[in-house]
Image (tube, rainbow, N blue to C red; front, side, top):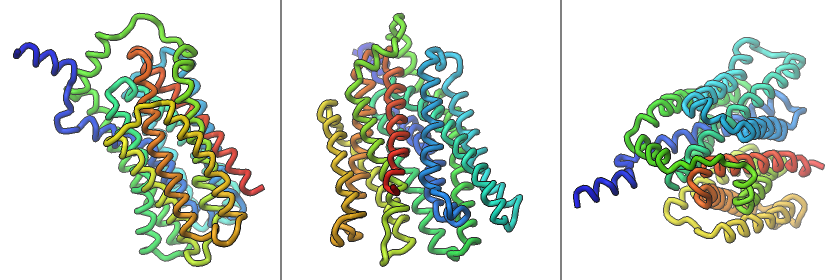
Length: 396
């Protein structure tokens, strides 16, 4: 009996203090924290570059560069063997830190920037956003690929973490907006605070990367994976064919979401009552709803990939509803209706993303799980790019 229990413990290693879960949660938060810091500081960038569509430019620059890295990771089949998980993650987090410090450095170096200099620094800031996107692709692809080989709670932790980063930055934004003067100097201080807090959290994430694979539970997981590893070479197209429906679903999810959030909610919707608090409230509402949706999969996961994919397709109905908020009758432009739609946008994004990203790697052989997870990350990235480009159509 005792030997049987020992065998069961080897097959199902336990994360006793949930340390591995917490680290995956933190790494997920760190993966999306720089992007949330950039989009939450929109009023600061809008004040610096009033003639630019900052949110939409940032979205295209960030998502496109992230997608390029994911494609490279998939095409280079031995990438995960040549460059270890820890090295990839630390390189990515270093790139994040460098890119986030560009804006504060410009402000500190050029106090009282003239209008001409502002125009030239815009391209420097966009270049830093591109670097941020490259880091996101490297970290996101590595983290999702790694979690795809592990039990489903780790993938759930990663995506719950990504949602939590949005809430953290939004709360920080609300506090700074309420406590600091609403002038160029106050906006600058608040934006610098986002970037500095984000940098500190990213440093913590780098430490977590070092600790993760030293945990006994992770050593047991990877020992079991090596024992069960198939010697046959995983073929990209074979894996992609097996997960074509969840891949389509994740593509639809992020095409819809990114074409509405954040650009449409921050630039196209206005409120006479809430004024410049309105976009901040909508972004915060979305992030809270997204977090609730991604956290709910810790309680219940929809086991049917088919139903989840149909749910993703159903989100296309959000387009006519949000269009009505812009061009429809007055009662549809009401703040309550817009907030309700934003909650639906966030909840469905969070829950369906988490379900599909958990289920897809589990629908293939263990030896193909990492490749399946990275393919899903690629289609997620394609959806992000598609959505960020479609977001421009709201201003046409």
